Structure formats: structure tokens, C-alpha cells
Length: 121
Length: 108
Image 1 (tube, each protein chain N blue to C red):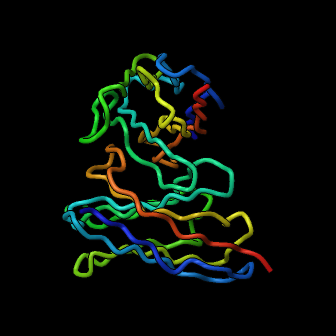
Image 2: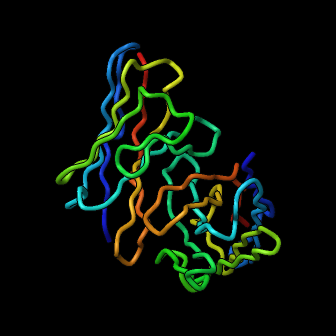
């Protein structure tokens, strides 16, 4: 059974930092492009960024809204994906999903259950 | 940046056919994927590569993509199909992964 399990969400003050993790199982994690997608309360899906697989040199891409503040990394030996968030703003409040796609233009076959990040003083 | 436009809502009676559109400039030249999101749950892929159903998705779900419009079609709509549906594609732009704004499907 495929599982993606996010952890690390919580309440953080504006300007603060937070690190999310996503533990994968049930599929060949190292083959997949792994993305973070977020959803603000009552809103639609917003892409945050991605890390490509080893065959594509683990290159990363980010949405303009988070570029320079968020860093995505992965550890294939641990089947894990990470999202390091800094300089957080109230607008970053959302449920953060990790999601897996087999190629750059593929759909997201796998999704985690989401981790809620609340940025508030 | 590239924009995908979906109607905010679609309503359909049980047993009828629902069509949810996703508009974008020359969208037919790229692969479009569709997700179903029920309240409080993560999205689920229901159509990928325009018209391919992943394993486990009912045959009632189908897709098409041509010109400036992609369409998700749900035949014989059931109460359990009530959800928000999102289209998604990759685009060679500054933000390469693009989602539509979502369409809430209401089963009357």
C-alpha cells in the first residue's frame, strides 16, 4: 500500500521557520519527482515546488511566491521529502501536501494526508 | 504566468452527465490531469494524460482535451461524486505546475 505521511506542521509566528517532513512507502520513491502543494483554508490548490529524481540530478524548482524562502530536499535512503520554510508570512497558512509524480509532465499519482501550518502571532 | 480557468460550480441531477471544463491558451498541446477532492481529504487523481483513468477509477469518469479547453465528464453521476474537481498541467513558465481554481460539483 502506498503511503505518504507528512509531519512537522503546527503554529509558528510570522518571520519564523518550520520544517515539514514526508515519509514515503509502498512505491519506488527514488524514481519519482516529489512536490509540495498547499491549500489555504477554503481555497484551491497551489503548487509550492518540486525536487526531481536522481536521474535528473535532484534539481529543484519553486513557485514565485516562496522562492528564496522555502527549500525542498529529499533523502532517498530514508524515502523522505522535506520542506524547510523560513521568513513565514500569514499568507503561508495552509495545509501542505506532499505529492509524487513519475515525470515532469505527469499527474500526481500519490498524495499525503496533509500537514497544517498556521502562521500567526 | 499561465492560467487555467474553471467554472466555480456545476450542478447535476443523479444519473445525469456532468461536464467540468478547464480553459487555457492552447491547452490541447499539453497533457491535463484531473483530481477529485472530497471535504477534509487529500486530492485523488481521477484522470491523467487527458483521458486515462488510473486503476480503481470508475469508467464513468472520462476526459478530453483539444484547442483551448479540456473537459472532465462524469456519466451517471452519483451522490458520492460530490466534490471539488481540479485540473492540472505542466507549463514551461515561471511556475511550471499549474492548477485550475477548482469546480464544486453538486449532486442535486
